[in-house]
Length: 114
Image (cartoon, rainbow, N blue to C red; front, side, top):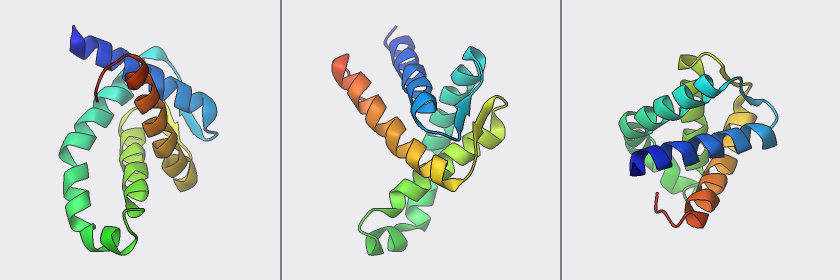
């Protein structure tokens, strides 16, 4: 039941982000659901490898390159899921930041840890 609640909160965060960030679009409920699932898988499998590969660059930029990696994860998800579109790199990077903030607020309000 807890996983379902996390899934719903993540879907809500994605919908809010698509409303706030131009160039970051989700077309339907099913696209939102698929995007959250694919994004979770990409963040579990691909992101740690990317963080390790880009560690020197991340250290050099004092961690700011993480925003680019988050944007890349969103671009990967948008290339896999039909109905989820991220048009360009700036919407991907800004969308990653906004998605993280919105998720933190929603999970914090629900009393859940992410």
